[in-house]
Image (cartoon, rainbow over all chains, first blue to last red; front, side, top):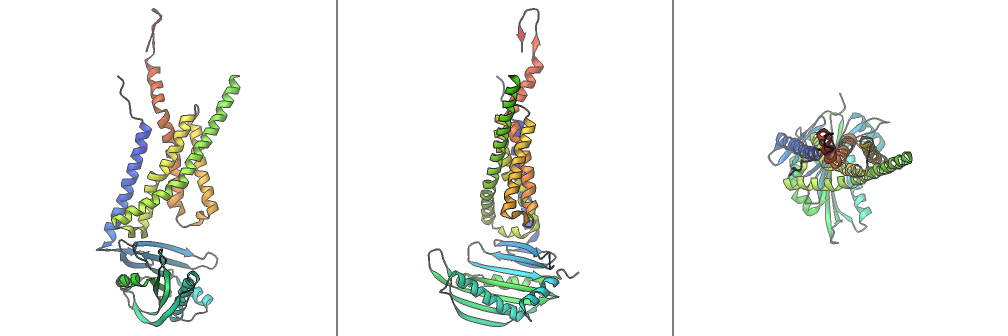
Length: 217
Length: 168
């Protein structure tokens, strides 16, 4: 009786699939092991150094304006089980100058207030019943080097509609500051309950944040 | 007659390799989305979804998706082509792989995804490698037993001219 020989191409196929899985997950494992700081991951690149929870979604991207020049580095992080998110944007020198000129703005306080207004307008587009409960402006320390940031905090009534049709208040705090010719804009927003639950995480991210010179050298 | 039969066989083979390429392309439209969702769920389950922010994750993602998505898509297309095509398999497998990959690139172009950052690492290179390697592996998987039998039967034929019998 002739033994059925395995088909070699099929074996090679299965081997390649297994190798790709093992190699890919090994890279992921080493990335996590190298950058883990307890329950946080430390993201360290040419633009910034930031710690964020390991079980939060995190996305980074860099956008550039080819015709006018200037680059913006963006990071957004959000928990998988709550409706809140934190975004950080760092502008290089050229993008910073363009931002101020095009927006006809003079200082970070104006940026923070404008961002808060823009956030409310965005909520209003989705829900006409939304209204502002309060807007608070102020200054706060941001980052490991304790930059003085201007912030605007806005609370919006009925800003969020859940899948079951209920309305919830929304909170949003927007900060902006200048670090070595780089504009930094930080926003933290969410359904009020989730915002309060994750505020401690936001404070930790803000206090550990290090913004490096971006695009200046 | 023989010539026209050969022509028809060729036309049939071209058609079958086109169909194989379309199978490859359609599976490349569907499978990546499903696998991406599963992959993220696994990362969420493991509690390490934050790793997506790192550049090394992009490389790991490309390697994993080459294996569990694009290689499988190419393999399925190659299985069909290998099953249907009778001659010049290498050529028709190449057509199958090319069609699968080129159609995908055209789709990405029309969706505007070719301008996305890192699309070459995330999609183009894994899809190119996966479609070509997968198609050839799929095609040869089908014909492998017959190639092996051809080789062994050819080497074992022993003609006994005296008795008029042939042994194999």
